[in-house]
Image (tube, rainbow, N blue to C red; front, side):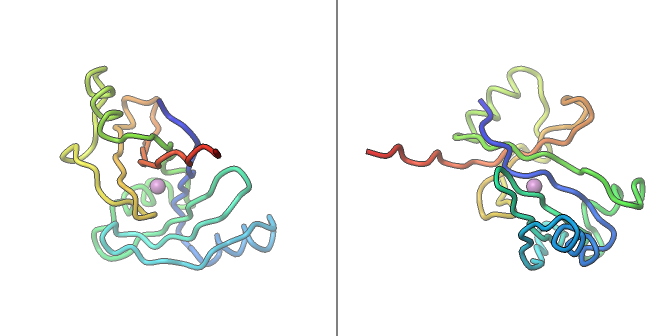
Length: 141
Ligand code: CO
């Protein structure tokens, strides 16, 4: 069901410092910071050849990652995001198998403007999983 690893998200206490490390020490292509007020985070995408790293830090008072950073003050891997071709069908298959979709179970718009869902980390070996609906590239004629 799942396709590509779309991104690995890392919660960081200092976004500028984290972005500089990926740019200057690791030599990666690092995009500029974007505020996502509806998600309570500011993100920087690090572009790799085969996937992306999403560096994120809390934005505003009720950030969903504030608690994570309290428990992991130096930062840490927050979630993995896998691509699926059909989010609702993936959610149905997963809930039928007993997995829990977070929130009200309805997709929301993720950091890339595409529909996403999150799966309960207790159902996936302690790892928060984001599914993002990405339509497969049309096959070349
Ligand atoms: Co994500």
